[in-house]
Image: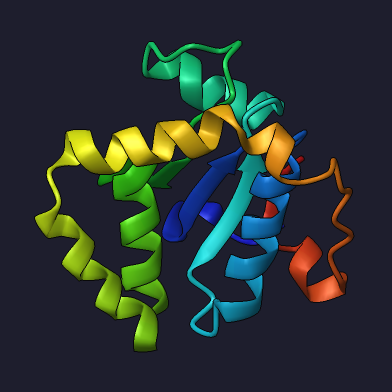
Length: 136
């Protein structure tokens, strides 16, 4: 396992096909090696949630955590991930002009329906990608 303290940690629902799709999408575009991943159901994910007083039984929110600096949730996490990936994805900053309650409402709608949107798929990372997972 790589040194996660210097990375951006993406916490995701490990049982969700849509979430696993997005983890794979980020992995393929993370050319600067900025991200690591942990499922919310893992011991590491549960510790992250409980230390912040967040719900440890509900996994419908993605979190982006930069240790010692910040954590973001829902649409703000998505926008920050796109910004960090750079290139064409940096254009997502335009999404910040949308009020948070609007972008989070869109996020919540997708989140509520995510199990209908994608099959439960088990993503199998390659050897390099496996190092980017703290816990599944």
